[in-house]
Structures are given as C-alpha cells and as structure tokens.
Length: 312
Length: 312
Ligand SMILES: NC(=O)c1ccc[n+]([C@@H]2O[C@H](COP(=O)([O-])OP(=O)(O)OC[C@H]3O[C@@H](n4cnc5c(N)ncnc54)[C@H](OP(=O)(O)O)[C@@H]3O)[C@@H](O)[C@H]2O)c1
Ligand SMILES: NC(=O)c1ccc[n+]([C@@H]2O[C@H](COP(=O)([O-])OP(=O)(O)OC[C@H]3O[C@@H](n4cnc5c(N)ncnc54)[C@H](OP(=O)(O)O)[C@@H]3O)[C@@H](O)[C@H]2O)c1
Image 1: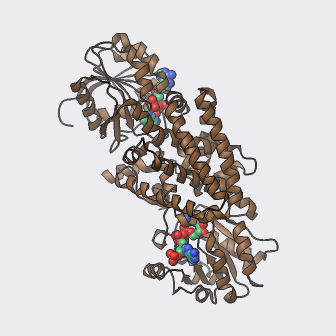
Image 2 (image 1 turned 120 degrees about the vertical axis):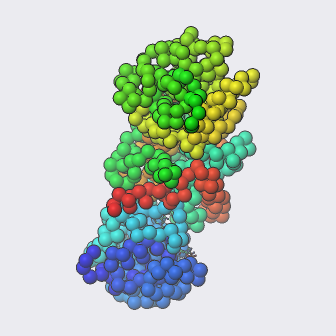
Image 3 (image 1 turned 45 degrees about the vertical axis):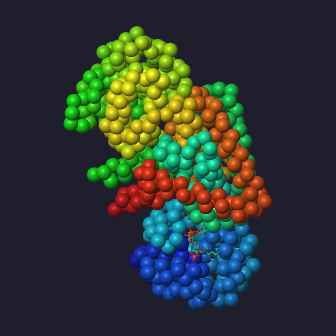
C-alpha cells in the first residue's frame, strides 16, 4: 500500500489472535493512521502495549472508540452485544462498525439495535485463524490468501462497503458478500462441525478405560493428533459459537450422524464396496483445496519435513 | 549403524509408502546386505527399480523370498493371507517373517496357519505414515522418533524377537510389545476412528445441497481442511482395515456416537457449561502429545510458517 491510509483511527475491541493480527497487518501495510486498543482485562491490555500493537490503550471500550472511523469488534460472539451497548453513545456518524465473529446472524440480531443512525454497520468474518489465542498468537500474514466474508444488511452504504472491502483486500484477503443466514450454514459445515467432531473424539479417547491416556499420546501420530489441533482451540470462543449458531450446527450434526450410522452398518455387515466407494470419492476434495491455495501440498501437512529440518 | 548388517537378505513383499520407506532406511543405515523386492503389478515394480530401492526385483513373491532371512509383508492387510500361502514353500528355517499391517489379530489368524516350522513369525506395526501411497511416497526418516508395535505370539524365540526389535530401533523407532487384541483396540481409537470420522465428514460435506462444493473448498482453512488429509488416504488399505478390525472399530464408533449425542443435546438446550467443560479438558492432550515428541508445536501444524517461507 503506497497511498494514504484508508482510515484515520481504527479501534479494536478485543485484542486476541484476531485483533492482534489485524493490528500488525494494518500497521505494517499503512492501512490506518492510528490504532486504539481496548480489552476487558488489564493484563491483556498490558501485553498488547508491550507488543506495541497500538497507539492508544484503554480498558474502557468507549474511550478507544471515541473519534474512530473504523471500529472492529474482536471479542467472542457472545460478548458482542454488551460491547455494542457500551460503545453505542460514542460511535461517530460516518464511522464503519464491523466485527470478526464466527457466527453472523446472531451478531446482526444482537448488535443492530444498538447502532446509531449514520453509523455503517457491516458484519464480517475473516476465514483465517489458528488454534492459539491471545495477543501473542497474532501475526501479520494471517489473512494472506484467505477469504473474508462480509454480510452487509440491505441498504448498506456502497462507499462504506467498498472502503471496508478495500481494507480486507489490503490485509491480503479476497472479499465475499453473503447473507448472514447462509454464512452460518456454510460455516457450520466447514468450521463448526469439524471443531465439534474434533472436541468430541478427543473427549471419547480421554474417557476410555481399556486404552490408557499414555497409549493414546504415544501412538497419536497414526491419525488422532490431527484432531487435537482443532480441539485445542479457545473454549469460550467455541461455546459462544455453539450457542449462537444452534440451528445450522444441529442440522449439520444430524446429517453427519446419519452418514456415520450408514458407515457403521457397512462395517458391521462387511460391505467392502460401500466403504471403498466412500473412501475413494473423498480424495478429490483435498486435491481441489490444495489447488485453490487453501492448503499445503506437502505430505503430512509438511510436518515430517519440519521434523527433519530440526534434526539437521 | 557402524557394525555388520543385521540381515543378509531382506525381502519386501509390497513396495508402497511403507515398503519403500523401509527399503530406503535399511539401505541408508546399512541394516541389510541385500534387498529383494516383490509387488503385484509390473508397473509398481518398475517404479521401484527406477527409484533403485533394491537389488533384486520380481513379480513372483516366492522368488524374492527365496534365501531371505528377513521377510516383511508390506501389503494391505486383506492381502496378507494370499501372500503368506504363496511364499510359504520357500520360507527358510530360521528366517524372521513379519508384517507392517494396521490390524494385528486378523494377520495372526490369516498368516499363522501358513508359517512353516522353524520360521519365526512376529507380526508388527510401525506407527508412522502419511496420507500418500506408492513407492514414490516413501522416505528414509519416516520411522524416526516413532513407535513400532510388535505382537510376538507365545513361545516366540527370544533371539529372533531381539533381532527384529534391533532392526526397528535402527530404523529410528521405539519398540513396544503388545497382545494383538489390545493392539487392535488401541489402534481403533488412535487411528481407525480418526480416519473413519474424517472420511465421514468429508462425505457429508460432499453431499450437501445447501452449501456448494466450491464454498466448502474456498473456506476450508477454517477447520475442514484438517480432515481432508486423513480422508485422502488409500481406499484399499482402509477398506481392509475396516473389514479386519470390525469389533474394536464398532465399539469405538458407538462410544463416539453416544458422546456426540450428548454434545448435540447440550447444544440444543443451550448448556454452555457442559460445552465449556468439554472444550477445556481436551486441550491438555495436545500439550502432552507435543511434549512426547509426536507433534510439532508450531501453530496450525506449521502451515502458516510454510506459506510465509514461500512468499519470501
Ligand atoms: N480464532 C480463530 O481461529 C478465529 C477465526 C476467525 C474469527 N474468529 C472470531 O474472532 C473473535 C475473537 O477471536 P480470537 O481468536 O481473537 O479470541 P482470543 O484470542 O481468545 O481473544 C479474545 C479477546 O476478546 C476479549 N474477551 C473475551 N471475552 C470477553 C467478554 N466476555 N467481554 C469482553 N471482551 C472479551 C479478550 O479479552 P481479555 O483477554 O482481556 O479477557 C480478548 O481480548 C471471536 O468472535 C471469534 O469467533 C476467530
Ligand atoms: N499408509 C500408512 O500410513 C500406514 C502406516 C502403517 C502401516 N500401514 C500398513 O502398511 C501396509 C502397506 O501400506 P502402504 O501405505 O505402504 O500401501 P501402498 O503405498 O498403497 O502400497 C501397497 C503395496 O501393496 C501392494 N498390494 C496392494 N494390494 C495387493 C494385493 N491385493 N495383493 C498383493 N499386493 C497388493 C501394492 O502393489 P501394486 O502397487 O503392485 O498393486 C503395493 O506394492 C498396509 O497393511 C497398511 O495397513 C500403513
């Protein structure tokens, strides 16, 4: 980015993995003139300051938002409503208010009532993340080559939408527009179900009496460890996702369970052909994901290569 | 390895990911004097020869085994019985016969009847692999810092067991001894269930009418892609695993399903505390796996770091 900054003052409410990554990207690429940071706990705020993520720090969200022309809520989705109420009185006319929450209809329902006239509320969700959380987990390339979904309400100001889209594009992402309900359905299958399945299988393994925990750990390279990454994600964030995208998640869970029953039946009755067919048709999707630039093509996520490098 | 080779002639029946990795490791570390390779198809055999994986090549398994003092079956577990019958007449007294199959009781049942007196049959399973298959997928460090489980039958010759253990240790692995039934139970949870769950969720996503395949691919970085790695594994191998470890797999599947129903119920009734508890207790297992040297501690399996390196 060589031109003028897109925004004068960006306020980030919440400064964990996502907030910290936005701060670092925006700073590195000159997207904003000033960065104001607010978070709930003094300890996290202090850490953000130590990391020099912003120019202004306060545990008072309203103080951070004061005068901002871009406000991004980076808190767990269950916390959005309270934050919106808090900052509502100081949101200035013409400002863009957005968020990064993993569910969108709930954010629309909970935040919209508190948005003053003249403020452009455009919910968003960058499809990028890791299993880690907190300000230290952030890094400036998190959004590179990823997608950011915006769910502008009907009648959204076109110029504001373009400006927010430009911001995410400068962060390295492609922008997609979507209806919030459809977003929630798509994310239920690509993100929420995978996380819940991962949490569930790790829980199942943890509960066994016949196989010890130390055996699970020792032999985890045979498949299990892949699930532990997602299952190490932040519990608050995921509790909030479950509570705020109930319908779509239950729909996907019930389809998954149906399919699992069919597989179980095939195993019980020794139906090798059905199993072979399923195991074959699932291969193509990975190829497509790699071709779309959303995954590494190194075997084993490149982990073996990494091991070898460490040995050198 | 600086001493004399452990074996004079090692015969590998099957030369895919595992066979090829054994050949490369054994050659590189001087564990055997001569490597004889046999596989079903002339095309795979030719590829093995191009890769210079051995010293002797034949589509006739008996020819490869002739004179060998170490024979390793590296074929899908459903093919072990036919191969055992084939090579039985030429197995020489004092030779060690082993395998690398992902199930163990079935291998015992199917191979034992064809083992001549004087031949030491010690089933095995290296807990190491990737989602790729065929001779090109092999690499010499696959077994480094991994575990290899041996399931010696009662009355196994101690010297033979020690020699085979030394072979795997020189390949870089720690050796564990286990009862074949217990092996099958442990692997059902750490490997078979994860693979089946991964195949299943990818299948579920593939079948949706409301979310398009291109959406699943675009947004897969939010969790889904992690499952596609396991779901890209070899269909023949996994069909055979299902057919040969039915009981243990069905047991684990039904526990998983029960737990999933409980989670589903918690989501339906908005039981945030139950969800938070589950999402919290699963975090520790990943930490233990990383501490045990079975997983990288880089966030996102180190994929983001890899992306960044590519950009440099
Ligand atoms: N992680 C991902 O992969 C990912 C990807 C895309 C979108 N998202 C979404 O991004 C948002 C933030 O996620 P994150 O990964 O950055 O989380 P995080 O690293 O855990 O950081 C959360 C931030 O929100 C604050 N916070 C937590 N609970 C709060 C509450 N009840 N009231 C006010 N502030 C609260 C925390 O403050 P204190 O530390 O001061 O308590 C912290 O600053 C979530 O809505 C999530 O759904 C996450
Ligand atoms: N992949 C893993 O992660 C992993 C890990 C540990 C253990 N294992 C076990 O290791 C064994 C081999 O797996 P892999 O990954 O090396 O498989 P792979 O790469 O697919 O290679 C399989 C080899 O077996 C041969 N083969 C296949 N079907 C056969 C049949 N019906 N009769 C005779 N030969 C046949 C193939 O021959 P052609 O190419 O000539 O047809 C090929 O040489 C399996 O028992 C598996 O359970 C695998």
